[in-house]
Image (tube, rainbow, N blue to C red; front, side):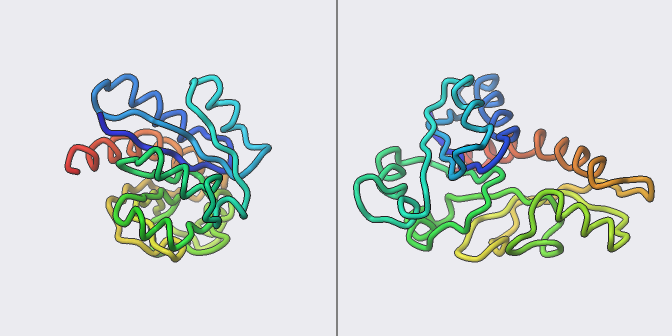
Length: 192
């Protein structure tokens, strides 16, 4: 069975959906671990409830080369896919190169619009509304050594109305994320 690891920095709602999807669709893949860089993130509690091992790390371990480094832990797990789900740090080049074509991210906008460093969550939705866009959506893409720069795997759109707020737009985006991210993960693993 294919295995994935998830990197998350916040609430972990996407991580939870991915784990639940894998359990409903047995044989597709399983989540071997969740990696988190924020000691206050709710994803840590979610991983405990889901009984998925969670590895907490800091910048030193993320960029390090010793046996406690993230790279060493990833090498030990040897995932078929690394999934960024609300993970806010740039992935070090050595990890990108070691898992080339095996790291994906989800972005809450239609890249290349509203992407790059500092563009995440509510900031993205406020920017979309301030620009009077008629649509927004999600982009699932491969990860490179630059923010939101990898090849696009899939984009899914939703309409933006004049009545939308950052909160209502976020709800529309979450619905797309919760449905499409697990499906795309499964499809990618079937092809690999």
